Length: 594
Image (cartoon, rainbow, N blue to C red; front, side):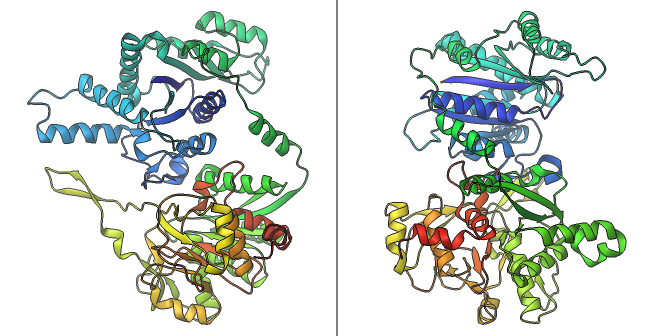
């Protein structure tokens, strides 16, 4: 196994994740198989309990792992399926070491950071690196590792030492050409003189060397393209070559003889297509965490993928849900007026996921506006539940209809806590008896399609019978409310195998066909039966529809996590097509009368 390590210096947020992903893309374009590992030095065992404002979105993997958003970049760039073990945290490492200590695995020895913590880190990296993530058998050729944070941070010191030892051990046993270190650094440009300063990067490289690691390449970020004299200065003082990046990496890893010239035609075509787009579509994103765009990074990327497929540029208008509420009209009237103006000018509305009751009133108003004015609407996770609450209040007249998450005393609980929500507990302190509660929700399978459209599904999926989506929720539509909701016109077009718990809903049979025909194939659930009435059979409520509406769709799962460049999520594609009045034409063109 060959390793490429990406570290960062000077300041955080320079783009180590994009750098690591891009390196992986280039190596894959050279015909090599690539896997990725992200190291996060924080003490959390995973990102599941972290605020989106603190660390951006929580990305969900196929195995239910709640991980750093950089793993989403890896999956999108490399088109792979990672596992929760591809995200290493200080919490996971210390937890594994302490569990061994409690079992007596260290035979009474004093457990220390060196060698026990560092050995655990090395063993974790080496064991995960050989797990195939691209659907093929056997280990990958190269493992790209990103070390989060900045060189010099106290919390990252054990990882630096472990990686130093790893670079030595792979060099000792397999030759010095199995490890390549890329250091991402900042080249500031002083506003007064406009000169590119290399001194911060020099100091960062010096500190990295003092810790036993020497970079082979520098990836420098600056407000302007690096000048030749800046590159020469960096090359001289940091002892790195000033030459083609991919050639330097392949040379360092001794892969020049087996690597093909990089084939980046698909990526180049996508970039050129995007650069040449002239028209755009206005999308109102009504959410809780709009102050930080990274909170909805995968949603933004999924919209980008769908828009490019429709030859459009996404124009996302961020709306803080709380600004739409009546209370905001009294406290912040300007923000209230601006939010409603933005919503009314949008061509479609998207309400993404979230937790807690802040902003829920504004989301309900946005869903109501979209429903009553025939504006294409997509609700994801919480957004689906919001559409159910709004419909129950506005159409059924149940003014106190709500979710148990927001009002435990509501007389009309149309959204309830999942009975399975308490099934999984993780011991935090086994000796003291203290336990931390964590809900783990893996991807649940879905059997697609009414029997009348089996031909279409066979055409798209090549007779596939297994699909799945990724979930992250604790509440679901109340099965006891389904009957009155459907009688009033809100259709759930999928149920679980018992026929009691609602799964999926769409706008009309033609929208169902669009979703089926475009849906990105994912893994893991057996088709147990086909039924003319239902579109999907899942374990939890997944999709709802309003047949009288051009496009009013709510989904309990998170389709954004599986959207890929060149393979947009069908739900996002349907939203954009409906927003630009292209949906009917698309269906007529692609479905051949099915």
